[in-house]
Length: 112
Image (cartoon, rainbow, N blue to C red; front, side, top):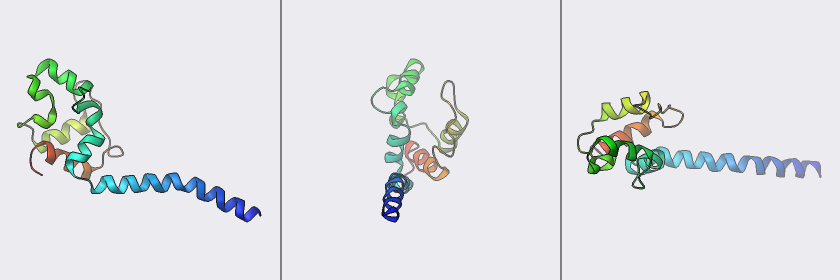
């Protein structure tokens, strides 16, 4: 009986980690647009997040949305993401992997 109980407890504790791993794998394979929406959209998405709002204070309205910009370059995007800019804090490799950042940067720069 104990063996069944331990097996059930082990299985129930592993399921959430398996689901997280599945989400991580699918995000690693996602394209730049999907990654941008998932990783950056809360601040820089269409819903006028804080990042978009702050950019709108100093840029023309159409440039406040990063997806509308035509002047962004991959190295600049990577530097801003990793080092931070103004009130934007640096984003670590644990939050956005290098391959994810590459895909997001290429998407925003129009290279994907």
